[in-house]
Length: 303
Image (tube, rainbow, N blue to C red; front, side, top):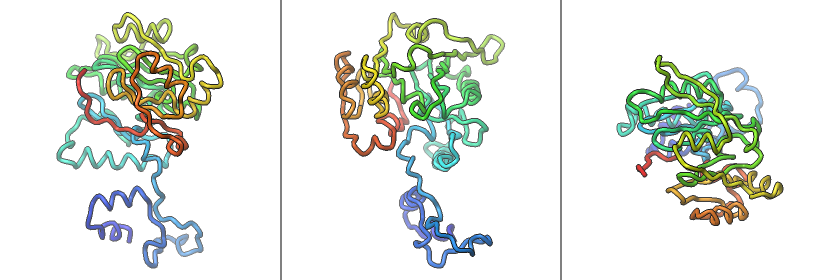
């Protein structure tokens, strides 16, 4: 019955949008499922639940260099979102054959909000509430090959809490040498460097020194600047991190899209020479995701 309903759409786009929107029982005449329970009284009005988290397009998959990782999501309800990526990269003639670095059928969770490309050789991945360390090791093993420009993966261990669910909720890149960071994670953060060893296996070492020291060494820079979300105020930092003050969308070196409401962090970014483009956020911020969470880059220009 559901198959016939979807096949009745003349527009593939409208069919896909309906899959995302969900289907109420009232939309299909005399709907009844095949199981005994379906014959019993059921007040739940929906046949297929909607996918409201799809507006966080960053998470279901990520493009990394010439490849793509399709993710096993941490929560069961979000795993449906990755089906769209599966069919795009398996069936669309433009994207078919793209190198797959992780798949939605894997055992351990990996989400796009934890993947941050620092340059053409370095990728940072958060060990977070939503991304398992075993998935990072498997991802690195597929990514770090002889034909890839990437040489290292920095696994950044962050607190496993709802407020810090992904790396990009507490740490994003805004310029070649500048990053936003939530001050509560700066002091006790641990970083592990994954790279291909001489024996061909993945070698893991713990980063030494401060986060600044580790980033300077990995990126081959003289210095890096960590810009605190909310500045030095504990109250401002907590409020603006909750409203995704650290979740900037960098569209070019030194240019970012941010929420209007995080005025303390935005002012600090401007003082550091970062050009900001603000967007309204009174409703979007209620979903607990910022501009980076709501974007899905497919192609990156070399800079």
